[in-house]
Amino acid sequence: MTREKLGIATFIAAGLILVGCDEVGTGESGSLVTPPDPVFGMAGTLTPEHVRRAADLVTQGKVYQLGIVTGPQTPAWGNREFEMQVFDLGEFGSNKLTGHDDKVVTHIGIGSQIDGFGHIGLDRVYYGGVTADEMFAADGLEVHGAHNIPPIATRGVVIDIAKHFGVDVLDPLTSYDAEDIRAAAEAQGVEIRPGDVVLLHTGWLSRIAEAETFGTRQPGINLDGARYLAELGVVAVGSDTPGLESDAPNEEGAAFPVHAHLLAEKGIHILENMNTTELISDDVSEFFFVLGTPRLEGSVQAIINPIAIR
Image (cartoon, rainbow, N blue to C red):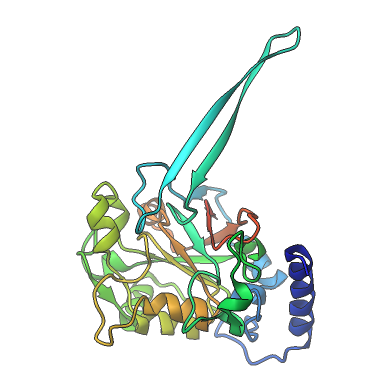
């Protein structure tokens, strides 16, 4: 079966599962909470009602870009690299038409990005029980390619974790948990609801020029905090850091436990390097979040520029 046919079959199967799933309850706001979709994860539980309610949050029409510029100097994890090539197309026709073309040679996980479910697994098993053998192909994932991430249009909330700690920028390796998130949200008077995209503001993006520190000593959410947000039924969790979770070592010696829990176990996408500065500056807590990912067939991640509208 070709990757295209597999994607179509998977989409149809997921739709049938969604139609047949039972309601399991409602959140405090009354929004329907359904079991996570085996292919699309929590993003597959979003309904037209989520979109309509989120659109009602737009009162000013102000648009915020949440993505940062991706380029050769953008700090990146490990040996990831970016290269842009631009070509002069020459001159054509009696009107002397000129133009350019371009080519990007890059790792995709650079700058503002969304992690797909093929990014992280546990013991070679990925979200929905898909094994590495079923998924992996050197020319693009056979299952869970990021091109299958559905459009995400829903309520977004930004939680000012830095303010909760009484600083503009969290210290390196700071770790924050469920109680910190609860307290910060309560101080802002904002409720986290099923179907939300939650962005956590730490101020860390202001240190992006310090490449090594920025990428290896970041503050972030710990596993307790991640479990808390997952229990609330959110569809994605992001922050203004390159990896969401704290670089502080954990007692169990687990590698990237927050990524493993959210992506592999709960089907919740991770958003990294989100520019939350302007939202915080404007004292915004909730907004209409809109994201359509680039549909690069079989990709593990995607470079993104989601927008917030208030």
